[in-house]
Length: 471
Image 1 (cartoon, helix red, strand yellow):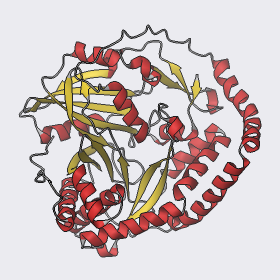
Image 2 (cartoon, rainbow, N blue to C red; image 1 turned 60 degrees about the vertical axis):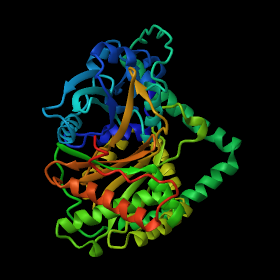
Image 3 (cartoon, rainbow, N blue to C red; image 1 turned 180 degrees about the horizontal axis):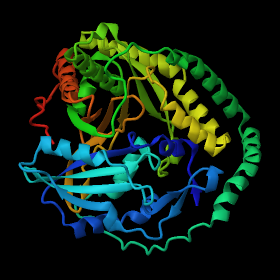
Image 4 (tube, rainbow, N blue to C red; image 1 turned 90 degrees about the vertical axis):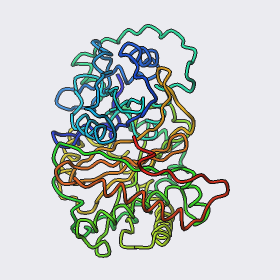
């Protein structure tokens, strides 16, 4: 019986009938589509490596402590692994519609919080695997670890028989009440021991957090009103843009900045196009984005909780020249890194562990019901494996991410790199953002402009078009 961290628990508390806090991805595989039996067998042999996949969340009575993970005595793999088919004729449009519908449905809180959907009929002998996992289970960086666990590095790997699994007995009500009380009694002593063991590290992190908190003071200043913020509904649209990782690295080498800087610059170009198409003036607009940052240490890989903080950047949508946009992003991100803003966010988040769970839950719900004019979008960039992966003997050709929406943020962007390609998964509120295709096309156009400005790389191949890089 493991307690959820305050951050993990907050993703449960944020969720309601409108804001569904699951992350996900869509893998495009070569065909033919595996049978349900083969797909279940491929997943079943890996479940022992990811215990969370057979655990569910349970709350203690009266929220006297945080929710906990317990084994699901009635775990049924057939419930979580599902098979469907794309509407005829199959293709990008049908895949976008299917993913939007699947991601608009909340996960069942009484069961382990994940689903896999195999969708056949994609065309060109391909099929799609839609993965859906609650954010309380995993953040983006550890999700790449999960992806590597579930998928194979070889087409036909040697498989060891899965060890037998016997669920632990479900805790009693008395046990659920007792555990947080014992943990709370121990925490002051644990904190004191930590101060004795590493006083220098604690002091250094406190100083960094103080600097970062000062740097975050501008977040209290609301951004100008735009169509990017406002009430949202429960339904989602989903689309994607494509870029070659080699193109991004060529731009970085020729024009400067980091891979993440290039990514944010082309997203800025996409939002500029979207605002112009909506009749809004980008020069009079500030588009502030939350940029999740992993604070997971090297020795923490292999754990599947959330170890993520955030920085807040302003996308330079008012700058028309693509090279100037990239320079603006680079200068800003360098300043944010020096300010230790991400460290401040992580420290402030960890401090919520000292608050009673009920008050934390109420605070999270209140925060996401307040007007959120200080934040316009989310852009999360996760590096993925740069080698081919396989499932049930089929190679994964593309991997496209999905990011949830919450509060009054109507559009979010997730970026995932896999096997030499970069995919921008764009989630939009169904009712207020029917035009996210403009954003996706703008991202690809902005990438093309930067590639042209960088000049041809030695031995480079022609750039893939959207139609050639499709789902």
